[in-house]
Image (tube, rainbow, N blue to C red):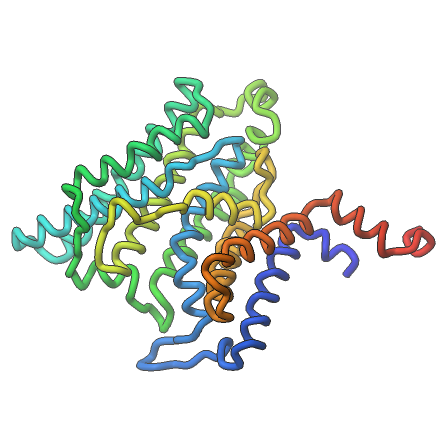
Length: 339
């Protein structure tokens, strides 16, 4: 039990549990779940469903940060992917194309363009030697302009039932988006724990020079991680656009990059690279969404909601810091009891 607070997921899980408990105290029906038409409904399901796009992006961001990188273009990539999917589906549907072909073409085009964006970022970082924040800033600035060129500056609407299933459909009684997140998470866990990829990622993040001397192909692995990060943003774009039946190139994914970095930090990953936790990043995404729900449910004025959010984030991050915990222990625990 004494080692439990030292576990990297202890404080994020505790923060999430306290947020949900606080909501349950203020709103007695908040934690209730019910089944209607074979589907599970409730605030907990809604929080998980709304956090799904951020969880996908956070997992991609985790791997990039693990190798001492950063991708602040994920919001723009989300907008590009959503716009490409909407444009493709609209044009194919108008051409009386087969339903499944239209769906797969839209998804494939969106994810393909997203992957190309990630490859662009990775090549700028590895081949051109740019700082990650500068390399991805280029696409962050230009990406929304590209999306607006594709959409001709308009909000594209998608009245296509098979596509709407991605963000609004249910499978086995749960939102389909949760299965997408679970599939990505399980696949990454298997790759990182059952293959050498996890060791290589940690080696690159801990000491790139030593990893290079040991034969780790950092110049191939790092761009691949940027591709996956953008790919995950593309998947998030599919979920977001299908949920609202539209693609807004100007506003979709706004501030997503900051929320993703924050979720990774809340999950206990080191922004300096090397130490990372996929599960922690998913929990971090849930914390952000639960906090947003809490702020709305207790009636916090919009002008102070960001302050409340910042205070909680600071608290969780401070509790994760070993130095801060040792200082707090020295204040509250007598010396004799620690010896």
